[in-house]
Amino acid sequence: MIIYTAIQPTGNITLGNYIGSLKNFKNKVKDADQAYLSVADLHSITIAQDPQILSENIKQLLCIFFALEFEKEATIFVQSHIPAHTELLWPLVTMTKMGELERMTQFKDKSRKQENCNTGLFAYPVLMASDILLYNTTHVPVGVDQKQHLELCRDLAQRANQVYNQELFVVPEPIIEERGAKIFSLTDPTKKMSKSDENEKSFITLFDSPQQVEKKIKSATTDSVGKINYDLENQPGVSNLLVIYAELTNKTMDETLSFFEGQNYGFLKTTLIETINEFLKPIQEKVSYYYNNFDIIEKYLEEHEQTVNTISKKKVEEVYQVMGLRGE
Image 1 (tube, rainbow, N blue to C red):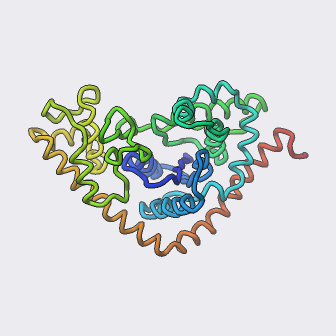
Image 2: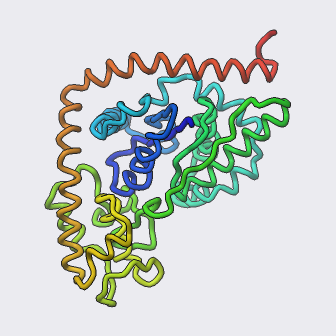
Image 3: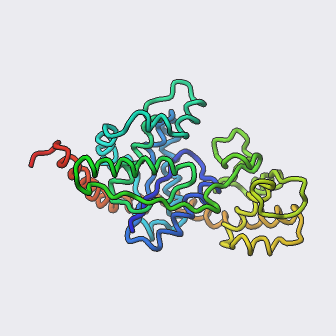
């Protein structure tokens, strides 16, 4: 099993990012023969970025990866350091139908919010396909909102294999954790938790202070039912808090409900505040260490990105050969 996942360096990582993506990846990588974890900096420039802030965000995200000890279980690299990602992009673009990209719900949502959105945003799913197909990836941990993009990736792999009558690409399978795959906003539990939300009380980041965590959880939306139940339809706010607690403590939902049985919302929030702060403290300490000793990460990247370049270049050359872009 070969697993690939990537995170954009667009600022602070939220608890939603951790639970929905990074924790999912960490759980599955133990069973993998090979795992790749990428800083998806090329994806991040589909919207305008301040160069200095982007550079800082890339550094910060790498520190988070190391703080979570991913380097012990996966090969970490920065997407833009590997030319093959964009070299495979163009052949895949030529196999992609306009209508396929126009149907992407994320493009529809984001293009509504942006004036004069660029072509990069439109072609974003094809670059994602390139990322995945380069490494003969067999499994991809994805959130519910990325599932459609992976379906396009699978379609492109199957299409290329059929056109060129050979197994050019491995067709990857999704790994979707239904519980915890999507953590919702603390202020509006009908929306996904997002760091781009204008209301900062709606999300918790891995760098929030204990005081910020307390303030945000205390103001989190609940309901007037007054009883702690896991009911996404009728009690979405309480259910969201329960999922966060269960994920951070590695408890099942049954165990979580048993623990909170007979308790009120105040107890739920107080307990969750303590749980989140206990979870964040060691991560923040390790991030600070790696930030101040970034040469450790630079040395790692220099060594491992050579290997990644070799593997990915081989796939690009194979594709170019099959397409007739290279001589016999």
